[in-house]
Image (tube, rainbow, N blue to C red; front, side, top):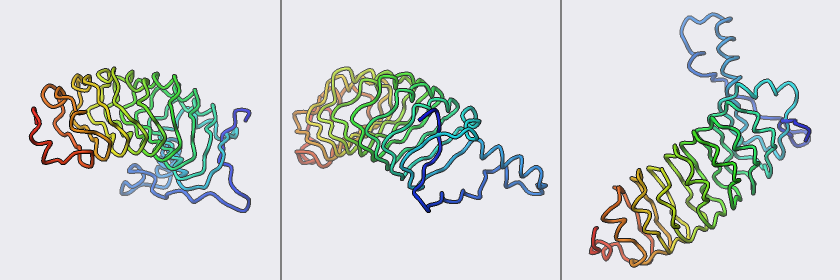
Length: 254
């Protein structure tokens, strides 16, 4: 696409008007017009919301490339995006990236170059895997992959030392694999998957406090005793699996 990045819109269709709230710095009392314009320009340079703009493609025009170094928050949710351009990696100051409810089946390798990212939401797309470069997102704290097509937990997730919250619910994951003890999250949601096997290593996750496994394919025997007796988990949700919760209350370590 020649390094271009702009919302491509359907014929006779305009982009929605932006939110007129330009952040707290524009809401100060006794603000003169010049101060307001300066604060407004600073906010616009760091925040872009194209949620629900019905975009089908993105490319970058010359006049927007100046935002690449300053933009902090980018919301492209509720569109029809099937691909993201490699140029996205040039937005090196991004801390929040929202791409919910699109048609993405892959992510560009360049996403791993956006090293300041702290929050990514990819809910309700068609992803089956993450690029190897995802391990470079060393500052990532929150990741939402719910409602995709993952059949396994991507090993890239185990390398993200600052990742705190992981939502990978509503996928097709069948097991929590060996190596899970490397995961650093404090909260993990795996509800509405197909999990039937849990590695004993889950008990060794150093920071895990909340583990949600509702509506999976777990039998009582599939739940490691180590998870109940030796882990740091304080909230374990198992409703909707292949056993009655009143029977679970008699399990050793409950």
